Length: 385
Image (cartoon, rainbow, N blue to C red; front, side, top):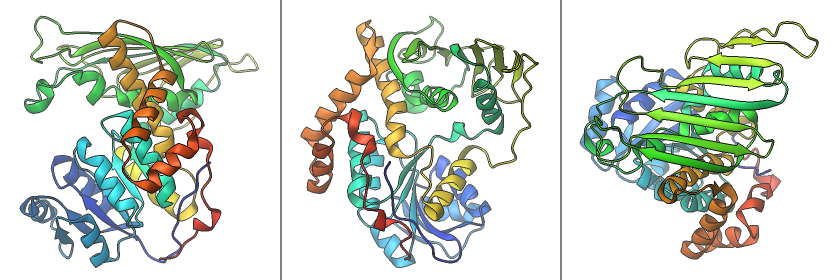
């Protein structure tokens, strides 16, 4: 289990946010609403965009600039929130971590699994936490579904139906594998959260309905196999007008003791027996923060306690690998093993890595499958800055 530098300084953690666009504005709101953190810097290549985002929220006294390192140094920042476009995730995360700053990064960790493995090694080499914000893990009703799932005995089938019809305009309507790459990582990550398992293989087909306003395939069905024998079936479309599901999809979990269903919003419904043969009840919902507020709260807690968060880069690599494997299967028409995707990505990462410290960590792993059990120096914990 990896460890990382933590903080025992008084007062809120001082954050620099990178990215001030549409999602950046949502993060500004989440940060300012959390008393455990404080926004001290905002970085964007367009400083006018940054100033405008702060003005819209009525926020003053936040340093603005184009350099993560310079703004972090000038403000005495403790950590970085990375809300840049995916292609910028790797360079921004690396710059921050090697400047001594832990990072909370928007999903996906990087455009490829190879770059995500590089980031995991960079986290170890720098001694800094890199957490990926899989914000759709943070729904109190999903936590209820997880609790119910653990009581169903052996789980045989989990399904997600995702049917929405957004007219985004812009790059999404032109990109390849738009549903798998841009959205499916959320349910793929959620099924790992529900089961505590990682898949071993996937078979996926993509297609584009005749009425689709997307240039490329905007619908897909994927069947994942897990080592326990569990099958996870994802079926989705982004050009499905009428009777749309929630953004979390419609879920069904079937186990040896019965079935639970979740509409993606409300508390799950259950028709199952508990271990003693009585009716299985849904536990009361927690009252924790949801979506990006939930991931921000877990990030802040991890930096105080040293407890490894769910979204640590080492774990999140597996969610990204599910996406990459599904894309490969759709392109080849073949079943794809997740281990093969990870191994190929590891070879790519090792060959491409330019940072000597990161390359040494990658080489020491020997394989991606053994990469997530290494330990950092325990003395890194509880560092006061």
